[in-house]
Length: 385
Image 1 (cartoon, rainbow, N blue to C red):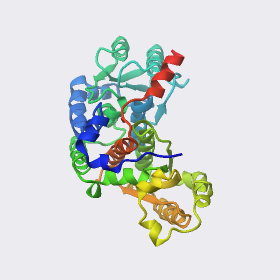
Image 2 (cartoon, rainbow, N blue to C red; image 1 turned 90 degrees about the vertical axis):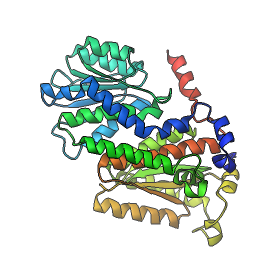
Image 3 (cartoon, one colour; image 1 turned 120 degrees about the horizontal axis):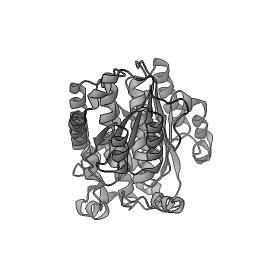
């Protein structure tokens, strides 16, 4: 299999614009703006008032695809200290135990996702408290109003839900803060927005490849099969997000995992046909400096281990991450590593997600693809409608 790679497109503004027809790069760069706008809309919609009825017995986060990642973020932020469990629900069926003592948070960027609408209707039928996040005047907003829920209207930066992650995530995070399930005060929200702006500046399209961490990561992944591992609860969410972004923006298969679990299964892939068996031995000095684009075009797809590191990792997990990188290198499998920035878990998540988002778009462009279209998803929806 041959991967057509045109490295020049990364630094050619006209070529990028011609290919990125829906301006996905601009949408990715809007993350900081999304955070600030979503925080304001959350306040205007009365998210803080959810605490008036007391802390729920449990929180169920419902959503699919680019909206579903919101549940993973909230669950990871709440896990260390929450007095109530947070569950994620991707599908049509609400868990049987959910009732009037619980809060259901339904997230759909368009407000029309059929699985999420089904969950919302069932939550209303059971008398559960309800927070909905999605388009204004949408079926989701109507259901929320009928159920006397709180609805936060989303201001989208791009037609695709995956490009509006922060617009969807911030209201749910602020709801968790209001309920006392995690601590995300206003200054953390502001710092997160500032950090996203800083990453956007660093990874901006006009920044040349050799100085741009996202472009460099995209080149590293060109023609490779990414196996992405997070080393802590926050990095695990970022690894899943990065894999999904590679699927949709770069149309590339990718595997995500979390340490230590990945060391009990996925690590064995290092010995398989895309790992050790694809290499004669440890890389030579010449191989270390080989042209990544030439390798991609050769059609010899190989594993690349991508380690995402956050500051919440267990000491033994840190040792596992280092050992995993060494193990991969000994088998001729290249390794990329991203280390989270910031102090608060939300900041750390933002720094990892932002770089991965940019890299996924750049990789799509390297493959000569418009990152935005999702033809297979659209066709599948038509077939099951």
